Length: 83
Length: 460
Image (cartoon, each protein chain N blue to C red):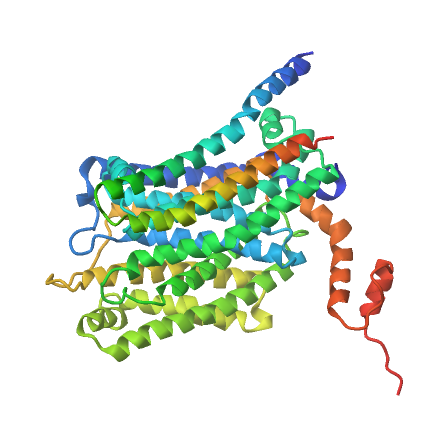
């Protein structure tokens, strides 16, 4: 009985936390992109050679987006194909 | 889903199911090391960087050496694992996870050393608010973030089927395993999704890993400091990183094999293959070192020569020559002979390489700053007990985190071992047959396939 209650509780915790996984990852990647965009904005405002920021962001942002894509593909792909 | 074969692989879950006296002892010793590091850092945080041996002109010392060393070690994992996975090297199966865990743990420690070196960590906020992408330090921050994200994903994805095994077998922390297993039941479609994700990450992680250590080298080579301003620093650092990474992996394999009785999984042949790779990297490292120093010596630029002689005959000579012995003489002396390429021999060579590569990083950082172009009197950098304490703390923390990981997840990939048993042999035979000319069609059974590979008598 005790074990069943525990298992039910476990299930409830897990289902709530499940949705946190993609949200956390999206927030992390989104935060990094916002930060890079902010540095570009600062460099333009300060007239401080924005080319460097733009150049690096052109490489960094797609890489992070690709990783986000892989994670989402994995997350939804595994959850959707359980049966 | 293919579950756990208790009789064959149940052994791999033993570290997760119970904690022995040895583990508790190891954790206590490592915890003491971490505490020593934390106390040292507390002292530095309270009294400032004045308690370290850092001053003008030598403003980078142990911390930056540790940073470069740890980031280098991180290449063990993902780069080696990704290359072995992409090339379908079957012998990779028991060792890839050991390598991938090293990567994630040391990246965390390596990046932490930069925070420690800041002296005032609160000023990190200024980097976030006013960072300038003209600075290679910020390139570092970006590439290390990308590498950390990629290697964590690359560690996690192949872990999912094993987490599902834990979810179904272990009674403790079930909610945790259920969460991380992402509903894995092992359907063909799930396998396809997993394989595809692993494939993309394996390809993505290689350029990211190379870019990380190239960018670490740019922190030095983009300056005009003597013996730093070099065009080969990027590849030189990458080669050194892979070199130290392989050595760290061999040490981790030997310790885990002994501690968790993994002799049936991590066999002498794994050490033999990796040690051959270590030998090649040793010679490659020597080639880059020789090219780097010869170019500096031939140019004979006065400021460069000050640094050069401080390494060859001056106050840094003991470190320099120890580095040469550890990185070249010991590995080449041991690993060139098949008789000495035993597990013990590989471990001795790897320990020497790790020590030598740490010294190599130190030899790059300190002598140049001690002999700058500006009109400072030459100085010798001497670390204080605070820096030694934090270094001890870093190494202890790395090993402790690694140990904790092995208490939560299997350190040998169970599902990949099972896959190797059921499909790997057949796939390998098929693959070898596809390389060779005039072999029988692919549809013949495996035993016949193996016979087809055997040399045949040619009639006269």
